[in-house]
Structures are given as C-alpha cells and as structure tokens.
Image (cartoon, rainbow, N blue to C red; front, top):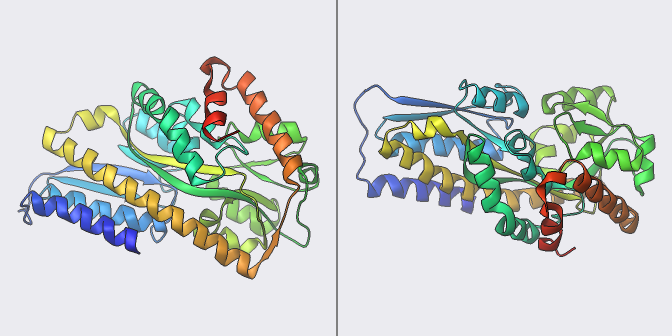
Length: 332
C-alpha cells in the first residue's frame, strides 16, 4: 500500500509541477498497451494509476489504455502485434522480451537469480546491454518490472523431492519459453506446453499438476484454487519490463514522448518495489494454508548447472560470456 501511494504521489507531483489543469476536449494521441495481468491484480492497480497520470500530465493530449487479462493474446502474440504496429506497447515477462532480444531471458535460467539482490546485480552487469538489444530490435524499455521469485507448486497428495520425480508428474511449460525445454531435457521429463491463458483450465482437468511460478502469479491468475503444495526453495526469478514500440514512441511530439518516458520509469519502479513485497506476502499466505515441502537442493543444483551449461552451448552460444557473467553476478 505504501508503494502504491508513493506511485500516486510521484506521478501526481509531476502533473502538479507542470501546472496542469483538466483540459478541454481535443484530439488526443491514444496508446494501446497489453498485459496478461487481470485488471484487478497488483499489476493492474499500478497500470490504472499510470493511465490516469498520463492523461493528467498531458492535459488530455495523451491517452494510455491497457487491455488486461491477455485480451491481446499471449506475450508472443502481443510482441507480434507490436512489431506489426497493431499494439503500441506491453507489460511482458522475460519470455516476451526474448521475442525481441533473446539474451534477456537468460536472467530466468534455473538456480541463478534466487533473490532480489542477485536480480539487481544481474541487471547492473547486463541491463544496459539488454536495453540496447531491445531498442535495436525495435522496443524501448520504459522500465524493468518483476513478477516474483519462482517456486515449485504441485497438485495432489504427492510432492517432489528430486528432479527425477518430475518424470512422474505433468509439469506445465510456457509454450514460448526457451529456458524450460533445456531444463526438462536434462531431467528427462515431459512437460505440457501451454500458453498462460490455458493453464487454469488444464489445472482444473488435471492435464497438468505441477507449476513453476512466483506465488503472486499463482494467486493473481487464480491457479491457487487448483494447487495445494508449495516448495520452500526458490528456483529463480521471473522478471519483465514495460516496453513500447520504439518508432511509435519516437513519433510522439517531444513533450508527450517525455511524459511517457518519465511516467513509465516511475510506474515500473513503483511496480517493482510493490511486487517484491507482495510476492513474499503471497508465498506466506499460501504456505500458511498449504503443505510446504523441501527438495533435495544439491540434486536440483546439479541439474540447474547442467541446464545452464546446455543453454550456454545452444541458445546463448553466440552471446559470449552471457551465462558466465550472470552466474558471477549471482555469486555462483
């Protein structure tokens, strides 16, 4: 709540300092953004404040609207629409960012960024290169935004202890992810490939029974009603960003472009701070009513390391020291 109020105050202050008053009706630039997040989610609450702040600061000359709950499709579809000029921007995870610049998703390699300090360290080392890669590919990063720290969630009476146990489960894997295939290949398990909107119905039918995700996402996307166990260990971090079609941004009048850049940065920072607290609170809530379980950390670390080595030789082979640099930043 404090971070949310800080966002309102910060964005409102920008408008006040600019001496803005409600404007008369006039032709406005309209920007359409997409997100997988529900409107009533933690992410949605921040985006709605941002929408109002943009309208106020621009004196009604700039209108920002979000399509929530995957109305514009999964992240791969949203990025495709951005590239085609059919969508101006989106709030996406690293999976979506990788559709513009693949190395960004390396931040989500398993066993790597297992706390927020490591995430911050990784972005200090590679954040500038990621931003340049995104911009060169056509997307301006208005600000990093996090999803949460990932854990293993399961459905049913049995949990998992070792990576080998996943062979007897039906784990969900995001269809567009390039990290998970390497992990499950090392394990020898067969994941069920789905897009995010497909997860809930497949949990209900039992087509999947294992999810690796931040606790906050599990709650906000309503997956928690179909799960009942959560691991005590963090497997990695789910990061993201608020991005905008670079040509669309550069095509805005200078004052409106500045408004988008300034308020976008403030919104992303507020969202990041809020998510860190809310994700931990979501985990505490779920652990309080569910069965928390431990895994064989050494066994998982061996598989995580093998997965990163495989990715280093395959998906990130052309990116030099990317994997090693991120491992060093994470203290591995």
